[in-house]
Image (tube, rainbow, N blue to C red):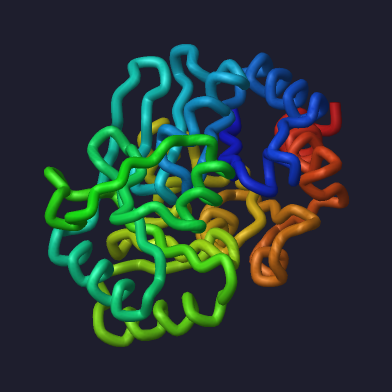
Length: 271
């Protein structure tokens, strides 16, 4: 048995946010052959599960990883195996600094609903892309009733502002891990959380050698799992950093079923 850890956006999904027939068929063949396909995304669980259900990955022995590795979820028993949160002090600091810079920031409640202080262009764009709803809570972060898994900063116009914000936070606080899932999304989770750590944890939990794992991704938040897995695969449309870290770069991009290429080569041995 091998485990494929599979990013969603611009990896499994094409740029029209669709799963190609070839990708869908390859995933089904891999599962039928006894392998595991684990969706591994920066999205909240609410944004992951519709794709998991669409692929039929809800039977016993099916799992999903959300929030960049902060949550590992048993899709059959519908419960979290692992959930690691930010502290309230970290959340307050992130909100205060984001508001000083005028940068959109959002977080999540216990049900993984997206929470924002006010409606703006960024939240409308994000929820359209991930296909989930949001709720306005003007008194964030004080309105939170539990520690959230992550915060997300968005700037649709200036990647440089987000880069500056990341540098500022990293210089003053080493308890927060910040990385990009795309040029407009700066992910904020607790230190030690990453897709790579989730890959290692899950392989240990399943008692599968890490050498028998394969990962596929395209962005900075995928780097750690490309490096952790036995075979790290970067999409043809991936960032240069991902391609440099990968063991394999697909010939096909996300618009041409690059995931099926990976499955056929590394899980089905060219079948």
